[in-house]
Image 1 (cartoon, helix red, strand yellow):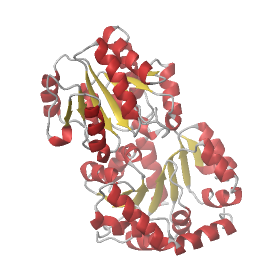
Image 2 (cartoon, rainbow, N blue to C red):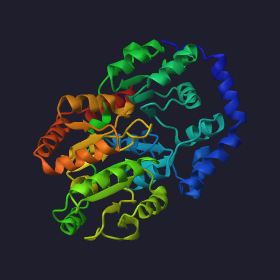
Image 3 (tube, rainbow, N blue to C red):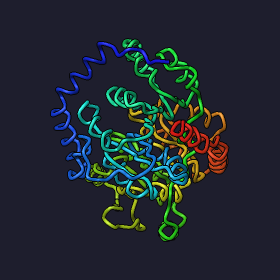
Length: 426
């Protein structure tokens, strides 16, 4: 079936992004500088690269940042094992660093091209992918239209659509239909997203609900020798982790830890900021509040007097989950939609979260039903809950239920890899 005609709204977007390409590159450079991105790779945002395209079949998967990147690692592994090259694009410096550490041989990383006609054309001309897959809510009109014009299968993986996004697309219903109808395969996290996309014009024959890829991702890696060394240093001190904190949340976590240490003086908090480039400001703030801190990035270990260990490095989140019986998954006191609870569940952690978790409503709803997590309203509730878990038998059932939940998650990776191969070979 032919895709609907492109709308005047899209034509206007195409023209504006073409004219605004220099401004978009200036903004991309500014963002690189702010986040310590590799400026020698900034040209990738314009669709330029010195990396050669590998021979053979190539799948392009765009996963915007760390969470989306981690969710597709198992899928990348399976495709590469089948002899398919995979090009993964992301937009953040943090995810690029992680990609360098985690991608298997046979997979490549690039910063994603800006959604301008010029950058998209250069990117597609060079890489010539056999299939294009976007992860979650990455809907880039110029890239979708350009790939479709070249006859490339388009896939939306782990599709997620917030209520706000749905309202915005409904105001542009004809444009939405012209874009979503160009996808060859759409796999949704929840039935509600599938129904919403149908309203926006997605082809019901290629749209289905499969569950959340993040639930089927492999456990985060750890260094067992380092885990044993740190475990010996920490000993039997009550330990908890605040993972992926955002600006404003460190103050609340600090207030909670004040309650915890008031009950258990030897308690240790491992604080893991979502963006390590904020670590200097966080360290200064904690020191002003009177905490004894040590910093991972400075090569410091948590000593007997350390009250907060600032884990301001990349790629070690699994280590902290391995060590800690209790984890507060942040991004849930700040309006950013929450973060991945499946990752600590793999390690059998008792999982706490705040009330703002729209991006993981499905996961937390099911985990709550299975008594595999607890919601805390604010810093006071967080502190009291952590302190209580250290002193009551409530801890062990939460840990067991979290591990059982993630273990029972449906295996999606093999099925999705098979579907992508079928599209390439069709």
